[in-house]
Image (cartoon, rainbow, N blue to C red; front, side):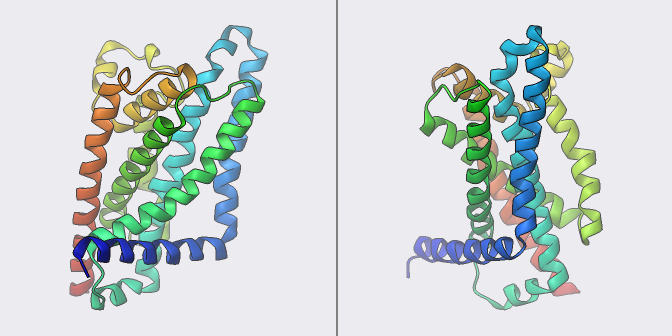
Length: 259
């Protein structure tokens, strides 16, 4: 079997296993859908009651999807998956299997992409009902979401292999490192409010480019050419996240061999 076909086959097997576990633990899926829905409804009420802010509501759904829903489901979800693998000692079985490191990473990307698709439908649907319809290219928007999922999963591998050994260890790294990324990325307010020094720093933040790209296509109907700087950085970071995820997985297996 060619190497690429083998990796894809293994990736699908990993994705099916993870999704099956998520379905069995259906409460997590429910809250991942409920969280962006409640955030969007809350922001909708805030913007509706303040006429001075109402014009900016069209940008809110993209920020909630990128900085709220995908952050916790894909970055946090990856970390939780790795911690669970450790606690259930399934990593021991992976050591004895011919599973390719890239296949494990891509399998988690595939499983969480299904979750991300559901969250995207929830956010887009509620936003349209609240008067903020999706305006741009669907294909371009899906590409931004897909690149964001890969980037978040890569960061999740990094956090999960280096900081989280138990379920109790997950929240600390997410809060300490993740929340500043969301704030600096313009998730909760327009980046125009950032001082010049922080705005320059934001260009090194992948969440900034995720938000700007999706807000541009969803709220303003901008094209790939117009969003090229953000898409280029986001694409490069997604590739780096893939390499980081594979390296982190290999590091995790080395740790298990020495236990």
